[in-house]
Image (spheres, rainbow, N blue to C red):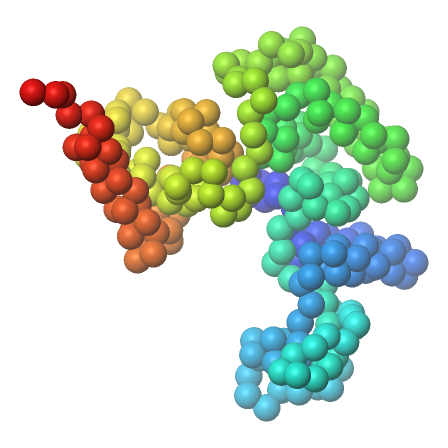
Length: 284
């Protein structure tokens, strides 16, 4: 499984739980309730037209619910166009659940039992960086509490032992020992989407890295691979090194090189030039 497969994507989790709990209606209902609460807290409700726009013309909610009634849970009425309308939550939505979201620990535990024991080490290593920004102390405590909370209910003995083994193995390494492999900045911030702490968002930052490599402002691929570039700019910007690495792939560059992103990067570079011209020119 590639690293993207280790992210907590709701529709992937829902599929996994539907397979595992096919003959366990009580467990199915418990999971459905947790998804409902998660989507409710995120405000991810849908009106009728939001649902039907993804289906062929002539589809109605009545027909859809006959076919996929298990997919939607009804929410509270919400105001739209001056009147109260019914809402629903899509339990198979392609919503990513991130650290800091409500019930992250529950979905993290669910994901653990969806993957092979042979992949748990890679999964845990991925989330140390992706979700916890290499904060080893916080991550270690989180794992201890997840085991304590969900052992026997979601987390099996085998999974529990595998997590503990990974933690023990890494306590003597740089990842969980307090002596990290990479130099860390004290108080490193955790970035949020569009937080505007730096001028460029994560995708635009990856686009800038690509441009700098292609114009030989920084080393090119044969001397600086995407992983190393991601790590370097993670320190400089606070964005996830792993996500920056993924955004530097050719297929991702094609996706993120939109007119809007290109304009934002060009504007930022023009501001750098303006700064050099107005602030850095030596006095005569």
